[in-house]
Structure formats: structure tokens, C-alpha cells
Image (cartoon, rainbow, N blue to C red; front, side):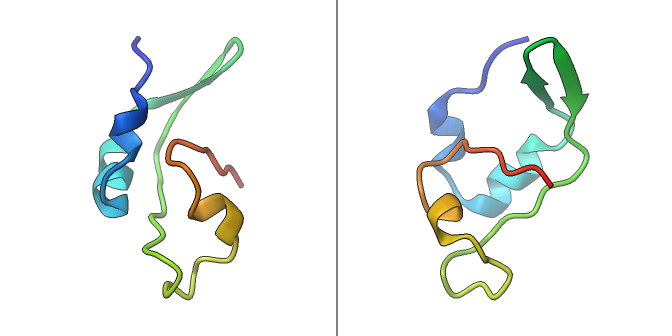
Length: 64
């Protein structure tokens, strides 16, 4: 299993969200398949509520 490069995340949010589906999130010895994503489309997106997290560097995971 290979780690996605940082450049993977530095693209359009919708494209990244679609391509993450089916990939694995690995933390220590746990591996879970990604079955859902929510792309946030900028500061004008009313669903975006965490500016510091959503508009920083790509590749940060926000799990809820």
C-alpha cells in the first residue's frame, strides 16, 4: 500500500473527494476504507465551518 503524495491533495476539492473513495485511511495498526467524503468549495460554501482546517494545506483528515 503506498502513501498518497502531497500533490494528490493540491487539486480541485471535488476531484480529490471522488478519488479518495475506496482508498484506505491508516492510523498506526488500524486500516479503514474511505466510504464517504465531503468536499468544501471555498469560503463562500455555507457548509464550511472550520476555516483554519478547510483552507490550509491539503491532505489533512477531518474525521467525525
